Image (cartoon, rainbow, N blue to C red; front, side, top):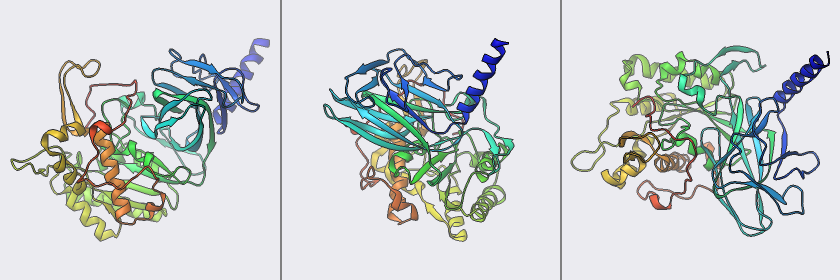
Length: 440
């Protein structure tokens, strides 16, 4: 009887925790501030408890004394990941970073390597408070009242992703990441930018692959705007419908939210003609978004790395970019012409330098990679970052309504003057894979 009661209490405790949406975690030692949950170097993730580190090897707890929250911290010489069981939704995460007796350097990413904070440096004795806003999602389709009405048809490889796993996962990275505390609170007011698209937009989990979608959060003001990236490799407009990905968005999107739409790479090979399939679905999506009070924004597909003998980019996307431009005019919706901006960007780089923006690596650059990687469609982190800057530049230059939410992380950028590769900062995550994403 006692065992049964103990089991019931454990079950109810786990259930209640799973519904919890606000948390205060004090990283360091068992010496925690009142109201905070102590997190130490041995706090390995346990689903029954509902939080913890994915891997505790290499973690170090440091206690400098003094303030219970800022006087101690967790650090490691390799990237470390903290996960929390939490319902889907938008959350503000407040982080205290630094060392009361030393310096620190911390980069923060969430879920599938979504860039939030980049190379935050603190001087000796300095503690900084930073806020990020994160969208957490699962694969269940619900009505606004929470009633389950369907499910997204995930691909097998998606089941390994960190953004469909019913957890919020935060990655701490860099030369000397030092985390004092993590506070998680729901955000019910942020405008959500829902992103739809393919492998050139998706939150890619594995190095060296990346897309502009996972870099975009870095350039927006937290609390006001949150990026919800629903793109997936290999998808077309039709496949996005067939797998019910767009249905998930229709049941979540609110008046004032945004719907970014970028398709073309896979649509041109799917057998759907521009007239019968592509144009029809784009117009249907635009109409539906407007009916729901959301703001549709079309994004033309960026170019592949294909040059002619004069070092000019060759259009390999048929008439799909033009079709999207025409529809934007016809439906009077905003257009981010990433196709044109990427043409300028890649031609400025030139055929050889542009390889540094794509997944071009010699054999054995990554684990289980016996042959060279030479992909002229998919981007590495540098290329993805530059394309994200192109997207933000278009928002700013066109004075779109989203312009007021662009953060100070965005400086004036021109595709005629790309950032130098050597100056791009990206400490690699622990997840690496040489397998090419779906689609081309």
